[in-house]
Length: 225
Image (cartoon, rainbow, N blue to C red; front, top):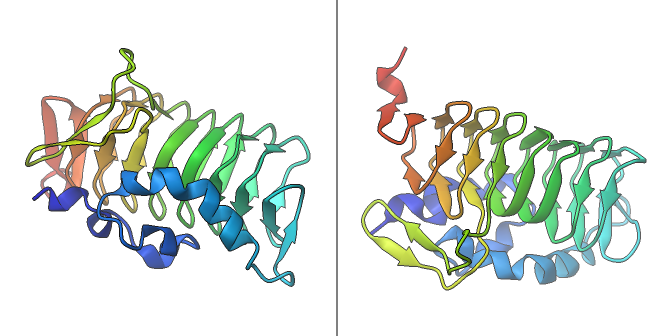
């Protein structure tokens, strides 16, 4: 039931330093409350030959490039060969994967970015998990709180799932592409290898291997030129 929105269907756990946080979990939102504590535990185990500790509970790979104007609050891990650019704002509870890009004026809060994720231009990503090589176009954001402040219900493909959580952003499977200026509403899930058209407002679940043109037109990528 709702197999397509399970962790195993969305992510290649070999592509994140945070793989162990998913152990014992079925759905991705189950890890959100664990991120901060997990980072502290993992950070204290990282080899000093590869990572340096910068401030309280902040670990940065020596091969990473972090601009002086970036703001980073812990707990946080910046992975190998990652790039945190000018005026990025990392508010804490953030895992930035190897080779990932956090761009100009991008804000992160309570997130796991898998390896080679790109959030490079004016993005807000909160209470979310972004899979391997996921990319958010300029100005696209995750909305993580409903306007009525009610607890979030995931609109699964088979049946809705009550999360009991007030703040949930989005879960993007591996190789997902989000078009510029799009809003991913609370609890949005996008399956692997799917594309979202620019300026979209996305709710619910988008199947893997598909193209989201609008809420009434979602087509299989294999059938689209």
